[in-house]
Image 1: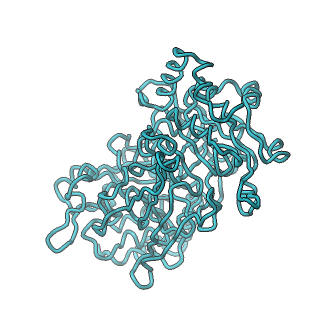
Image 2 (image 1 turned 60 degrees about the vertical axis):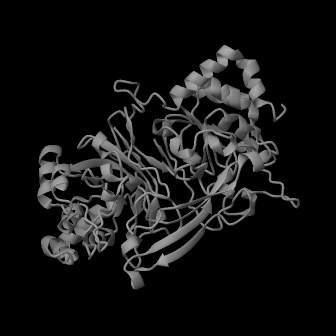
Image 3 (image 1 turned 45 degrees about the vertical axis):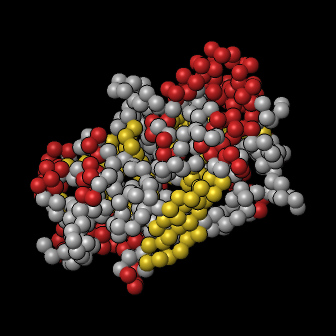
Length: 272
Length: 272
């Protein structure tokens, strides 16, 4: 499928009323109507385990652009000043980090404006590890989603879909970016024609264990454009998906609450 | 009580065996033994509501030192570059932010080393709003803790104790720092002789709705020194405590996972 025509596909598949219904479901999913007392429980099952989905951010952590991830400068020291403090400098999209709608839109929601209720949600894990091991350009397909749903049930409004490609195993080496001589990267991602299906279901956010929601070889960022353009959020470079069930976990997506942010590193955990 | 002798008080009150027991309870509370399958549930009750305990961080957000909180520079723009990205620069202790043990110690745990299981914990809210409104130098006392425990039960190992002073209502104005002509600040905090009591209970972390765990007038930072010195964490400048029950909520303390960090801004939410 052509990468650059996602919103056209949305319109054709759903029609105008379908688009409006999807948007309405999305609004509900994004928690814009808050959590009124007596509403459906955010989680009913007991929590017995906390899984960290966050990599440690450090200067050599791999970045999309290949530049250092963060500058950490010690500015006060316990021995000299009585306490330790560092000064941090980074562009927002480093480490395990969020993409807010404004990242790929002219006027979408900034990261501080994401409704907090949309950040605590049912988490579904789409495992394409074997396919990605065989093909670093692998893009998760609608058929992969349907297979997940055949076993775990249809994704509910407000859910997060995480792509487990197994790529986080490469995070400490050059295979994570997997850049060729010309600089082009090769790693897995979401195929753009998943966007309308996820919107139909009212999914709130997506996560990937790679550097980008789109596969590394994408030149159009069509998944980003379609997904963030529809007002949804993403998380890139997550860890720990292998320690989660396919469904049943609750994501707590600790997006940074920084004014006007286009995303940025946060703490992402799952309650199992 | 003398501000500067907290660890002496710990030793006198508990004795050597008591200290060892408190440390052992603390180790368990910090999740150093993880969450083995079949262990006590992190939370048993259904979650029906998400409460954001995080202020939005922006350049004019009040800081302990009175300097701008963060520098936000737009470095890529959607119109010109195809996507929006900001560059951020800040010292770690701004906004709703964490204090890791290393903040006030020579070699304590850095923020990335806090066990993730210790960051998801039962939250107890100690309400001293009326006392703080009458006295901006108010320090929460052991008697305040005992009164809370008389109604809510003894704080369990691994809990977080949050001090609700009502000071977050002042966050947009000069009253939040409440600095006099000489620069000295006046706002509420924890009294240092709470440290040994919280260690006895195995409490994992504390939170305040002010700029410091210690009251604004402290010159010794004795609560910081005792609490962080015992390997525990704190969160400063939290919001939203008024929207929580005294007990029954679960804190998800999204500490930043940045290598060597002494703390820093994170996303803090409560599940009710």
